[in-house]
View 1 (cartoon, rainbow, N blue to C red):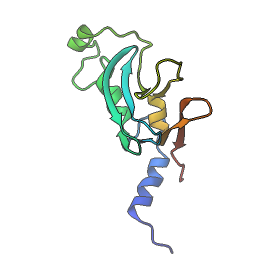
View 2: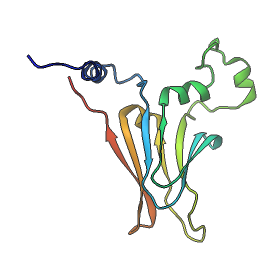
View 3: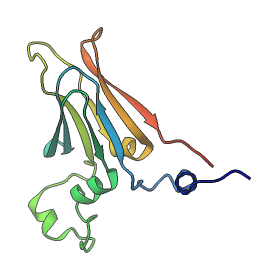
View 4: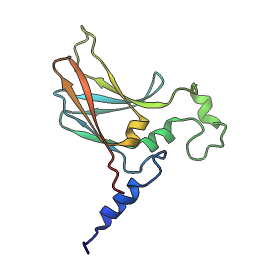
Amino acid sequence: MRNVSFLSLVKCFNGCRDHTQFTGFGTRIWNFSDRAIELQVRVGSMLKKAHTLKPGSSKRLKGKSIYKSYMPGKGKGSSGGGGMRSLLYYYDETCHPYIWIHDTGCDFSRMVKQQYISLEDLRDCSEIKIFRDHQRGCISVSKKFRSELC
């Protein structure tokens, strides 16, 4: 019988989990472009937080913590009605948090296609790579989905 490591056993159980729930490990986002990019946490058009990624660097984001932080009535200690948090900000029911990829070093004289990462992408993907497509003149996103081990 082969030795089964604890880590492989944990990965197996995580692969069999309910995929409607967010994972606790988060998603590693890599910047493989030649310029710095900004990962902007937004709800609708409102900017909530920004992370700058230099070329070759990465950042781990957790969809569950973003959801709990920026959805009214969904965080800790809220009583369903939203409380003070809903008084501070107006949220449309259709506005959910998402990650906007902003190309900080772009030339504003021409239109550049922007990309976004949804909370579902953070839940379903273990790694997201951002790179520059020189033929189209924009940034592109490559997603590595979580493996199903069981």
